[in-house]
Image 1 (cartoon, rainbow, N blue to C red):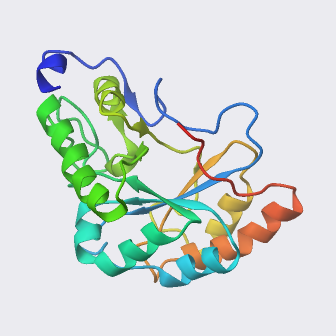
Image 2: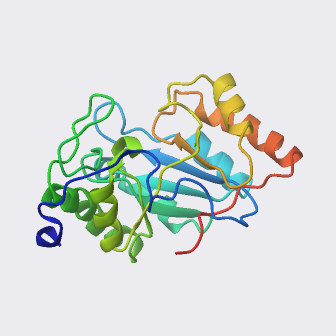
Length: 227
């Protein structure tokens, strides 16, 4: 795999590239909720209030688990994996932007070669397979930024790179009122990104307030599409 992509120079960089699932396919009937669990310093907590709300309301969602968060929270990770409402996605090993040239985002350096891209995906993928008993379908890089070569590597590894069209909680920095405003603005085919590893953020309250507003607009949360 590494040899196959050696020497390829990236031509694109960003959140919404060809080959990346940034919104639901045409004909989809709702919005997809996704929650990153990024791990690392300051990011290993569990927003159980959010998880319990989704469970109690029967709301499907995809949780993208980073290797560091998974290692810090084996019990909550297992509970998520065993819940039929939820899908587990791969959020990388070191939470790096996915690049073959070291390009970074938000001050976080990216992976710097096809070999580093492979490790960023597959070290965590092996851990997730042990957790779930099956391969992941989806991958979201740290920060969600990637280049086009990295996109092709992820696809060659059998995963679909996923971005978003609605930034629901601004990396768990938005207060609840702003989370409510952003998530409630979602429309059919949007993919919402938020976080489930910052229980003191406004995410849980904002999402809980936004879902009834979406329902009133005839918009229902749906799983990410089958691949």
